[in-house]
Length: 178
Ligand SMILES: [Zn+2]
Image (cartoon, rainbow, N blue to C red):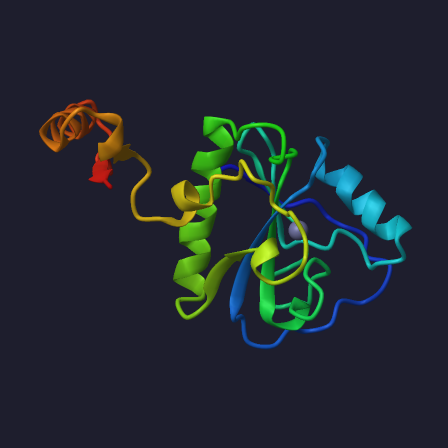
């Protein structure tokens, strides 16, 4: 995982967070660097970038608010959650492979840090479309990245053979569903 940790200048001291109960994924609904998110959040009168991590389309991960401090990303949950934002608008576009791979790594890393935390989408906690209908939540947080839909094949044996070929090609997580 390529991680960049900018020296953010906070407009106000960041408050310590409580226990992490949720890891919340968001989309930016826009494209641009982490610095632009920081500037936009400062302009809203916040202390600075509201997320703990920002994952760019090319898979580069930026740290935002330090873990253990309160973020600004999910109303009512900020003191007990870690916020991860993905560059892009996944209401309209698909997620690049590099960004999905970085997201999987980051989620796995956070799961290790907070084994009891639940991984959710912003829309699971609030009335919002975030992180967009094309956000690959299952692929990012599930145990398997390649799910072969049995219904897409004439019979299940064919689906199983296809999954086998994927595994032989190096996709160790491929399995059949449905
Ligand atoms: Zn959101």
